Image (cartoon, rainbow, N blue to C red):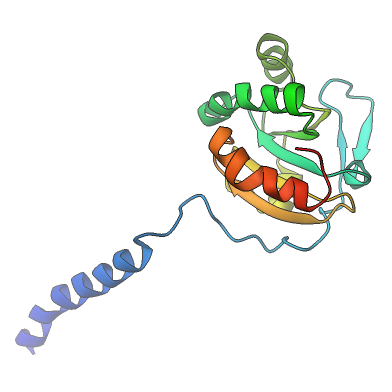
Length: 178
């Protein structure tokens, strides 16, 4: 019996090794989403800049959009912000922001100071829409087609490489400018 107990740590180490080996080479920014091919979840959220105005999921109808989940508490969101401002200003990319689990005043100051790439920003202080989208954290960016269907989910920073290699081809594929 004692000899069997000696093999338990070996068995655990082998099991851990198999799990770690299975993850080698996988892209950590690629997380599957149950929403791919489905409509953006229904919502009614206040506009970040105009709290009296409420937006619904129909804001995604009519043109291809990027839905960018961001927060002032998120260092990676700051890293990608200049790229989003450039995409909106220079390439005409339609970006809808989802200010996620944030403070309205801090978010407004952020946009005033750093520039506002968003056609509109939804304010989601409790993270309800974020939860429905399956958001793990920020930043996350979704490609949403002109019918309001989620076509792709990118976890992590949007930079020139991500735009050129991944998002721009999808925006073009689904009928947007980019």
